[in-house]
Amino acid sequence: MFNNKNQKTNNQSKNRINEQIRCPTVMLLQDEQNLGIFTSDEARKIARETGLDLVEISPTSKPPVCRIMDYGKFKYEQGVKEKEKKKKQKTFQEKELHLSPSIGENDLMIKINAARKFLEKGFRVFFVLKYKKRENAHKELGYKIVEKIVKELEELGVPQTQPRLEGSSLNCIIEPKSK
Image 1 (cartoon, helix red, strand yellow):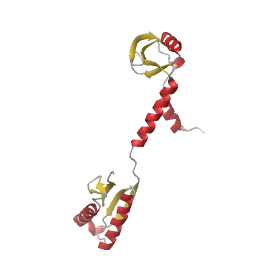
Image 2 (cartoon, one colour):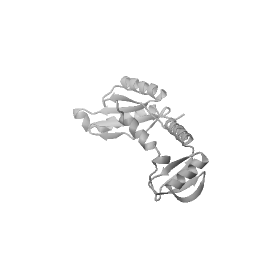
Image 3 (spheres, helix red, strand yellow):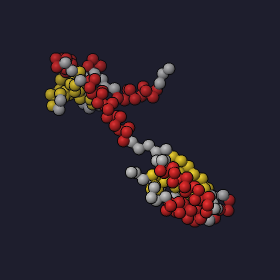
Image 4 (cartoon, one colour):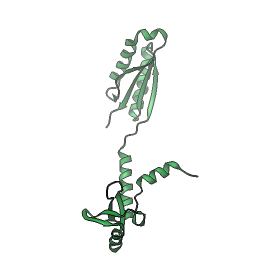
């Protein structure tokens, strides 16, 4: 089966090497040294003589920049860098809790305790307070409830966004504090 996702990532990271480079002239680099402008054939010949590959680094510049290097080692180092990038990215899973402005005190404490458990496990908690019918006239009740939740959870989490009204619901996202 044909996989578009893999094809895209392979094409983006693929550099032209040796015979794939078809430009008439290239800027040639070796190690950190600029050797000058050569024809593609001369650059390939120099690379062959050193036992390394000619790799196109910057195809969009005029003339294209090519480097003499070990392509296998270059690909390996790029893969290692990409894995390091992925490790450093923070990914949050999100849990959603629904409330109403007329929620009772005990029910609110149950929701806060559930949110506390989610934050301890490293989840982001998304609070949605829905207004129904006449509750729309008393939006301040919802803000008070969300403020109380934020205050109760301040030792475990930080509000990513201030409570904001979207249509007939009041939303607030709380992220776990980084350790």
